[in-house]
Image 1 (cartoon, rainbow, N blue to C red):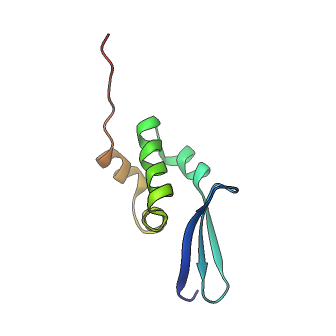
Image 2 (image 1 turned 135 degrees about the vertical axis):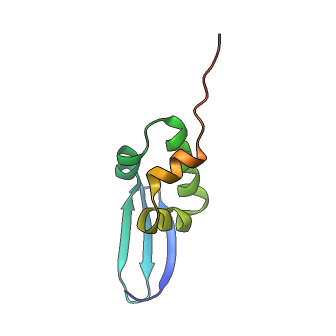
Length: 82
């Protein structure tokens, strides 16, 4: 695939879409990713933040990183005391 020309979240398909100069396209199903790697609402929230605010970083995490390790590092489970 040639150079990346755009990366954005498509709300209609719930996919982060990467479009390339040669006409190729990759769509990352964000719901499937969340179901696979996120164990709780805090991890899902972190992924949602990336999806909406930095879809390129999200795509990089999915293709080149370790999403499970990343989520364990950046999220904190909070408990509520009554």
